Image 1 (spheres, each protein chain N blue to C red):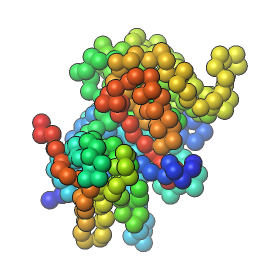
Image 2: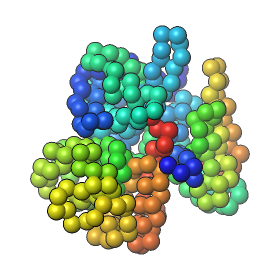
Image 3: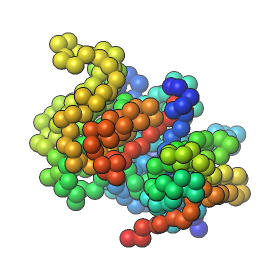
Length: 237
Length: 89
């Protein structure tokens, strides 16, 4: 027997998050549960037997047989266009997981947490924010979220809602909302100056973003052993 | 994206390695045979997935691990790691 089986996952709900991203909720009978930050592998198989798989972060904390992913369309990708534009409620995919025990946050931790997200790198960090809220956790959370422009924000209503102990800073790289104090641009050391220097850091985004953000944190004196990173690449699609 | 950032990290090995091992090897710490750097599998730079996954040391770029899946077998080459410390809860 394989240690980790592929399971049939039935799409039960779709939420359009932005023009190019949507959240897919699956019912996965026998789902063993997961930790915030873990991911799953999704496998698609064509009628001719060709199959391909990609990894996606779980967007929500454990909830019985229900598993949520938020998938960003990669225009020339192989899997994400199918997941974001074709898949309909009632359709089946294969799913393996949860996997990855490194990039995880556990609700029993009371340590301060810094989350640094680039684009859809927010997804596993959002699972942590939601897990904290659900557990009424006392750990202070600080999210620094970099996106191209306001319309690309994932979960804007939820992040705008007051959530005691959670601070959210937005960095826009291309276009800002009117009157926004910080000019558009990539993440800099100054953007991380107000972060708690003793925080457990979780950094997720495209590889170049993660390298830059992790370098800034180390330059600011954060302990490398407290910085956990997860990269998704140019071929993530 | 520039080619110098054309890699992922060891977190992406979690699923493929879970086909072989009952414990999560991405949290295991290993020592690079080339530069002696210690760190978790999750921190390696991973190139692939085709024709196979190649994990390199983030310190010196030495090949630490290679994993190739064929229809009826998995090939795992751990040439670059002195030893793995696997946490057992």
